[in-house]
Picture 1 (cartoon, rainbow, N blue to C red):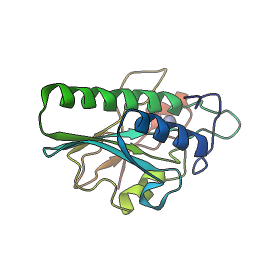
Picture 2 (cartoon, rainbow, N blue to C red):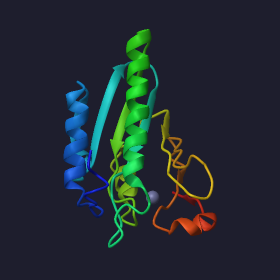
Picture 3 (cartoon, helix red, strand yellow):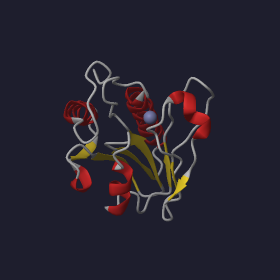
Length: 169
Ligand SMILES: [Zn+2]
């Protein structure tokens, strides 16, 4: 998807947004581009009824050093998980919905705060994301919705990961 080779800063992820929306549509997924009043946010959904599981799709980069934080990998991982759930729902014909939420400006831009305020995480049963790291393996950005509980800031250098604190919102 060429996101790594074309790093774009927060709220200016125009090519990433366009590429991911096109990919989702090419697979027959309903997508709302420019979602929740943000030019580079999107929302995609598949399925009917049941519970809703969402995956955050990040794609912004850092000034000067590009995708040092690996948000291009988050794009890939979250979309792979999304399509995996789509495949499972199709195969088993069971109720349930899966969403991919394109979340701009994670690198200090507060993109998810704007999305939360705009209601993007209402009526979601669980929201997941993974983040690449050189230090240890963990899954962060696990946001329990209805009462959105946790947002982990992502703008610190990888070597300071241990200093991350979870900010309650
Ligand atoms: Zn990051």
